[in-house]
Figure 1 (tube, rainbow, N blue to C red):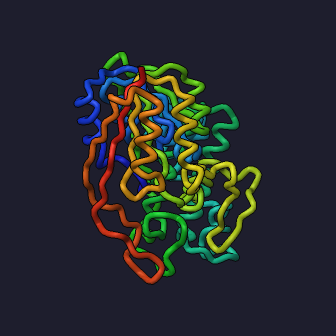
Figure 2 (cartoon, helix red, strand yellow):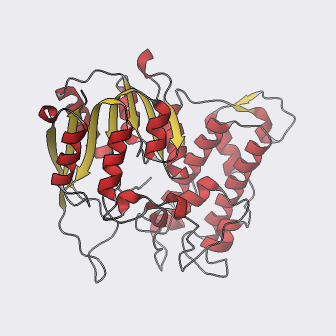
Length: 358
C-alpha cells in the first residue's frame, strides 16, 4: 500500500544504525507502526516487537506483517457448501472472496459514480466487488468462522487490493476526475505473507490499536523504543479515510462529510501533527517509557526542530550517549508541483536520533 512516511526504503539504514550501536535483539516497541515495515524488519532480525498505531487500517497490517508467525488456514465452511473440506488455504479463502457476486453496498453508493455523490474513487464494478468482500469478512467474523487474526489478515489483503485500483494519486484526500489505467483494472486480492520468525527470540510479537503512551504503558520494560511519528500537519485520517473505512466497516454506517466523503476522525487525530503540541508529545512519551535505548526517525522538514529533539533526548537519557545518524533519500511524491502545492525539492535527509537510558 502507498503510504506517507513508509520506511521500507530506509529499513537498511535503521538496521545498520542498530548494528553500529551494538544493540542485540531483545524486546522492541514501535508505537507508530504504519504499515509495519520496521516492525517486520526487526522481527526478521530476532526482535520481539510490540507495535501499535491509532489507525484501524494500520492495525490490520500490523497483525498481518508483525503479529502473525505463519500463514493461517481457514475453515472449509467459508465455501458455504457441505463442508467436505475441513480447511482452506489462505489463497483458497481469497478465491472465495473474489468469486462472490458483486454487491451494491456502502462503497458503491458513496465512493463510485453509481452513488448520488458521484465520487470517482472506484469504478462501480470494483466498488461492488469491494462491498461483497468486506461484508463477507464481517459476516464470517460475527458468525465465529474466523478469529481476529484471520479477520485482520483478510482486511489487510482487501485494503491492499482496493489501493491498487483506487483512482487516486497515492493518497485519498481527493480522487482523479478521469479514470486512471490502474482504476480500470479488476480488483485483485493478492496474498500478503506474514513474517515467519527466524529465531525463538522473535516469538510473541503483538499488535495494538491505540495511542503511543497507552502502548508503552502496556508493554512495560523494553530494550528498544523506535519512534516514527508523523512529521507535519497532515492528519492521516483525512489522507487515508477509505482504507480506514474498510478496516472499521460500516455497521452502523458512519456520517460522511465533504466532497471526498470523510469519516468521523476526531479520535484519530494526533498531537504530533499539531504545531505547538508535538514537542510536549515527545517529552511526555519519553517520560512515560521504560526503555534502555531510544531511536527516533525524523526528517529535516518536520515540525520538531533538531534543537528541541536534542534537548528532549539529552534530558531523557544519558547526555553523553546522544548521537544523530543521517541518510539522504528521494522524496515520496503523491502528485506533481502545481498551483496548490510546490515541493521544496526531491532530496530529503532522514535522521535517526539516539539516546541510551541510564
